[in-house]
Image (cartoon, rainbow, N blue to C red):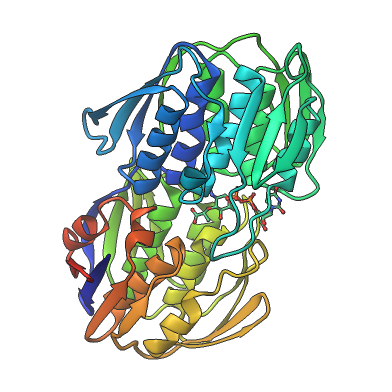
Length: 427
Ligand code: EPZ
């Protein structure tokens, strides 16, 4: 296991390249299963979860070749070819390490008429059920059975049929699985109350590039006219709005001035509004966003909710920033039931935070003090790194494998803008 050691207090300034979005990549990769032709994704981030998904696709019979990114896209290119599906089983030992594996369920069912996927189970932030995924696929004619920890889905003999899907709760993953199934279902599918996250728009645009017919992209209602097959395409993964928002908090907490190259304004309105309300300077420029601060942030009251509202994936990072704010902030986490694992760790650094159910009351303090802290989940880990960048003295963040799932080359990017940060083995 590794740890990251940070000696805090440096003001961060300079240009920081934003990578391709993890949560877009993880739903674009399974699209390769929907065609016999080649799908090439560019601007793929170099992340553990992306590598893990590549291995899962190989298990299913998809050949993958990876190349360095061309031009100024720092990511990688991956060309995938699923001429024939060799297996329709996503085994437990892969799914337990990467919950996003559940996103092969819809495409496998649509392409091969069957899929057997290990139930992903819960994780640190919640029990993460998949009932909405299964109900959506049943609306397209799928037979679903749960046996021995696996979901076994089978399509009717003539393949999936278009239907009506009305999501009672907004779900990013369930929307993605349903959409990837509907594009090859016979007839028309109407999907209501779908998630509108930019990653869903990215998925829709990639599917359209592959020949799918989708109306209402970006709205909460999608109408899909199924095709008998899709063709290959080349598609560039969108920039990571959560990575950009995380580094924006780093500028805000260190009195810094960062240019987030490649960050897309339209994906980040709620995040940028929160930063501005906290007194942070936010300027959109041609190919990125400048974020600067010359004083302590001001306190905020905010609540997480589905896009376009403030994203749950930014809650922990904003909490780290507000731990240093003038005044008392109130954060409410409405999406996941256990997404405050970073609170006791921030408290070890001197933060003053009280949690009451889904609400956290954050009383800003003048400064934080470096300490040994434990990463528990991806975004909690980032909030601890952010706190370490601003804290006085040395912070050691243990179990950083969580970070490697969502932040490409974190130490390299932060060192380049002035952070005193290094990775060490934590044996
Ligand atoms: C995606 O998870 C993201 N992961 C999460 O990012 C993100 O936090 C989440 O969307 C919300 O934006 C990926 O895209 C790989 P949901 P997902 O289905 O699809 C409940 C990160 O840090 N629900 O929108 O699993 C669920 O329990 C990760 O990058 C059901 O009840 O999220 C939750 O309370 C963390 N039944 C709510 O809906 C279901 O069948 C939203 O979950 C599915 C979900």
